[in-house]
Figure (cartoon, rainbow, N blue to C red):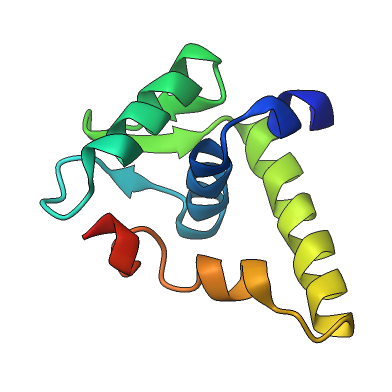
Length: 102
């Protein structure tokens, strides 16, 4: 799983982080950029993301959710110890609250 995750583009990795935190991404939301939509569809093609119950919503496969959650905990813990909370800051608020998604 680690090898597959590390081969992803940074935006695809961010989308996985968002989905692990938010549990769902609504693609019809008016402020989600096309790049995010493309990343989600690319992840779906790799079977990392699945279509949710509401058609336009996407969620993580259970094993992917577990892996990404563990990765977030490990990375954020290390960042806090090193006083460099980069991932922690970038994941706050999910895709709807990030300026680069507007």
